[in-house]
Length: 178
Image 1 (cartoon, one colour):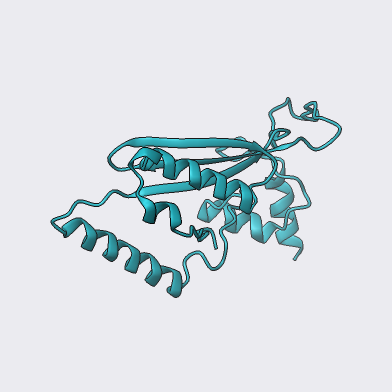
Image 2 (cartoon, rainbow, N blue to C red):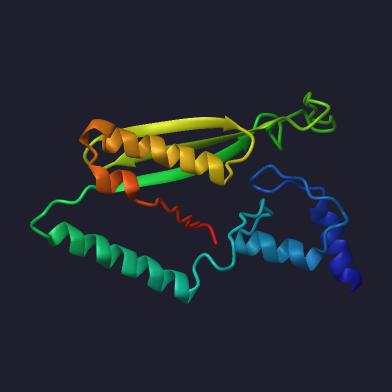
């Protein structure tokens, strides 16, 4: 054990090829292992655990098969993709650069900023169709208003027949992030 400590003490103040100085609080066995295998401490990338489950993979495959089947038909289909995204106005950086020994500081607002939610639709034939930004979250009323406006863009009111006016509209929300 003493020989490990002497070896660690001799190497702990040296710099690596990556110009990183290790403190003496690092385990010498971990230091040797990480240098030998070129392992570095990094920020974690978070992935929801069900994203790549077998069920989700099968659902994705079925979706692709259905789209390819519709593409093979003689009657061309128009695909419209709708997406909703939100972000916070007070978003700031989590990391910064500063001279060693000095703290990296940035100014941030005292309170959490407001949220903006954006909903947009694109199609394979018309490109960008419609977008709507909203302060705050998208609730059922907002999404139905968005879908009604999108419907009026795709099928103008003068081209609608009586059946279109009588049709009940339903919205199905499918989150692919699960």
